[in-house]
Length: 412
Image 1 (cartoon, rainbow, N blue to C red):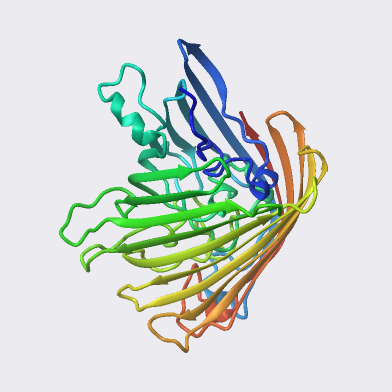
Image 2: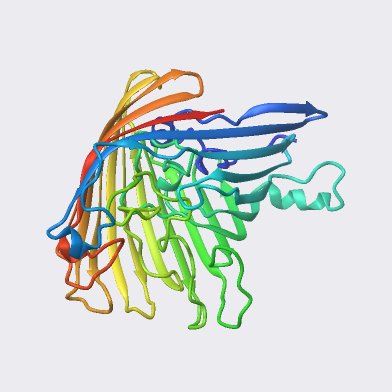
């Protein structure tokens, strides 16, 4: 049976024919083929990363800001991190995937489960319910515990040691990412127009209390005919009761950690803007990817997150744009990104606002198949926040950081 097109890919939920996504994603392997027999293939993925950084931080008053170390060394190495993943592909019927972090910036000495899911594309010939293939002619079904499909940047950001999808070292200053137990129903036609509807647990693991409710999400995407432009729009909502203290991780935390270390309060996700506690969250994001030539591409996104919690309502607009210029295929390139987060309401006070800006400029060189070297200069600043507004540190003190970071990553 000939299969309909599907937008599921190991590196992204978009088909690589979507122009901007195809250019921005550095080649990401499906892993090493361990075995293949009777149409069943078993792959293994390995990702490992080391970083060398020379970063400095500043604030109006470093002690009042809550910096762990007011003076930093001239630079040094971060500890190494790693991912392992396994994928089983059963002909054109289904794929099963699970992965773990061997070490992360959150848990540097622990192996930690990340995803485990199945993507059903059609029922095998020996299925008990072959009549279900009438449905699978129109949709794929993804079920399990997995990264929810919200926005395009989630498919271009670093995911612990799986970093080669990101042309730079750091992620945007707001980088929505969450894993949930749930289901996504996916349809895509021959012209790369698609729609996804999904629901999940609304929390990182599970919660069966009376106040816990399912989260809901949706996404549409497609290419503009005759124009090298692809676009998508995403929506997410979680609405838990008062007894649920921690909801969706989409904006609340960086479960896999960030890319910068040692600065500010030396937290695992230092520098990232984290929003609310995810219990009553409503968010949307619009993405566009434009490839005006064979070597250059631009991507941009804009979104809004509103979170109601016991510390007061929060409302943020966030946006960013990334450019990438391939010099020698994918083996040598230049990249730059600007991203920002603008608060219009914090702690239930519409007069308490501020913004965080991040600039990144860098380059990448693929020294050989699997090994990518990246170098980045990053500059971040905060401004406009009232006293008593805490992120990683006291934001009223206008904390910022800047410097160089180099990343060596190996993926196969």
